[in-house]
Amino acid sequence: MLAESSPAITSVNRAFSKQSVNYDHDDQQNMVLQDMRLQVYQHVAAFMKPHSSILELNSGTGIDAFYFAQQGHSVYATDLSDGMIEQINLKIWHHELQGRLTCHQLSYTELDKLNGEKFDYVFSNFGGLNCIDDLARVTKHLPALLTPGGYVTWVIMPPVCLWELLSFFTGNGKQAFRRLNKSGVVAHLEGEYFKTYYFSLAQIKAAFGTKFKFVKSEGLCALSPPPSRGDFPAKHSRLYPALRKLDHSVRHHYPFNRWSDHIIVTFQFTP
Ligand SMILES: C[S@@+](CC[C@H](N)C(=O)[O-])C[C@H]1O[C@@H](n2cnc3c(N)ncnc32)[C@H](O)[C@@H]1O
Image (cartoon, rainbow, N blue to C red; front, side, top):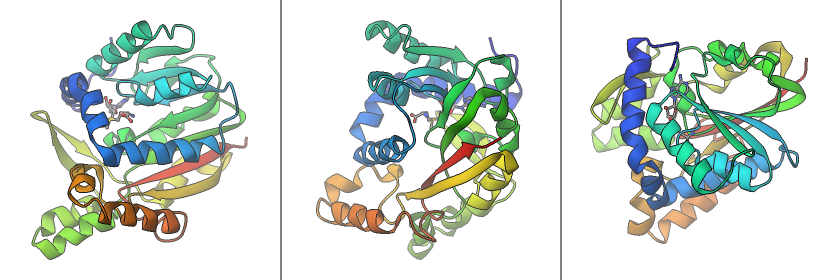
């Protein structure tokens, strides 16, 4: 049972628990999401040593946890949603991953409950951290959880997404500039409403503070469509690979390493 049960946390839990049932199916059907995951794995592979112990935040149904466990790492997956935790438990049981993949229902604001545990890597994918208004409420726990030299890779949605800005020209000004609202944006998911917040690279760096060294940032879907356009690859079978190729050539460079649908950011713990 979660100790933290504010109304906001409760609606996030309800929304993602409802989504958890079809989550893996929808993920597999969405080619944009599949390409994004692959890019995240390539990014992480540059820093993750063999047989690492990984703490995953907002792990959802455990798609990435399962992938990392299969790669020989040990994964401690956490999420606040009842439904998501149920799905990870099913994966552990079905694939006999006991000992390599463990899960715990926990908000990333309550990581102090993982007393004494130390990890080589802290990972968070696909905007789970956009459900909080202040990333420092999470980063403050990291020094106690990481081994010196350990890495953190987070995939977060920034305020500027070029693809969304384009919707201004199709008459949808509200959609185009929604991420720029500093007091957060109300998300509507599975009949539930909760606030989401968008973080610039500068805000993310500030939340990590001086005990962490910034290592790298790269854009995910800088010029190619975001996952909400999961139908794009099938509808535009020539244009989509061309846009992904374009992404590939710009994603490590300013401004595309910070202006994208998501950004992948990596820090190293250097106490
Ligand atoms: C978009 S899903 C991403 C799931 C997974 N990382 C993936 O890549 O498929 C966002 C996840 O964040 C989780 N989440 C939201 N707020 C959270 C919090 N305060 N603590 C832990 N998990 C949270 C949700 O329950 C949901 O599973």
